[in-house]
Image 1 (tube, chains in turn purple, yellow):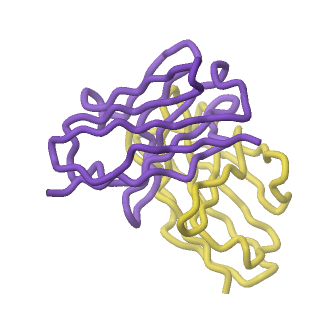
Image 2: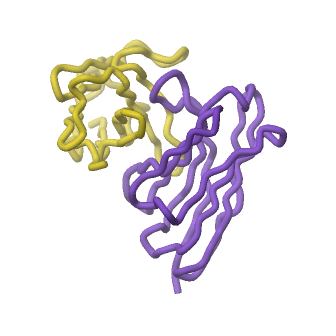
Length: 117
Length: 108
């Protein structure tokens, strides 16, 4: 059974940092691209970042220069280092497994990040 | 990376069909076949229901269908059922991903 479990969310002040983790199981992690997608309270989905099996990395313009995606294939884990956090980064952050070209077939339950003073 | 445009809401009675449009603005859907659709129920993660414009993952009912014409993609739900109520998002992939603005489907 495929499982993706996010952790690391919480309350942080503007300008602060957080590191999200996503532990995965049930598939060969090192052969798939992985992504972070977020959803602000009551709002729609927003793609944040992706990392391929070969470590090609892409970011949304809204987080470029502040967020860093990484993976540890030995630990079957995906990470998102978030620096210089802003109020508008407040959201549930999902990790998602990429399927084929351009789709997400498995999602975690999400972890809530709240940026507030 | 502007969001794709979807209608805010659509509704239909059980058994009817509804169609949700997804239109590119600065994102051009025209030349790409990597459009996916997601269903989301309250406080749940999204669920993939269509990929590659019109393909259904295993286990997704065939009342869900997708298509694309020019710069617009569409999701049709035929034979609407109560459990289809929720939010639906399109997504385009062009090296990076862009989601649609989301559509709330209400079953009357």
